[in-house]
Amino acid sequence: MSTPPPEGPLPYKCTPVFDENTLPAGLRKEHRTKPGVWGVIRVLEGRLRYHVLDPVSETILDPDCPGLVLPDQPHFVEPLGPMRIQVEFYDRMPAHAHPLRTGKLGLSAFSG
Image (tube, rainbow, N blue to C red):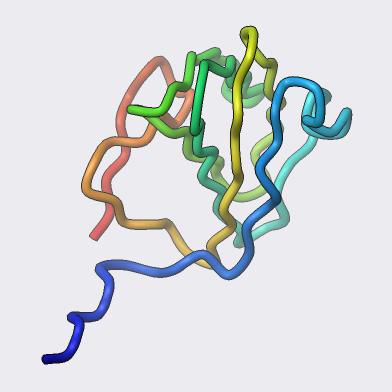
């Protein structure tokens, strides 16, 4: 029996798992993905504050609610105590079975 293909695009790159001590300084200050690159911030443990700078918003991410990073969108993250995260990168908007926080006043984004 063959395994059915996954729904939606697969990440083409993933960061290592970071904790509150190993999270790079570059992610704690303003940065952005390249044009055409989507990111998904996956919180494996704990909580993370996700700051989007355009449009300005702030969202708390946790294991039940990952964050969606739009292409070329300025943002930064802030650990809220002990946590572990990993970031996935896509060449198009990822499709997921659960909502992703976009940082836009807590709205959810779906694709697929």
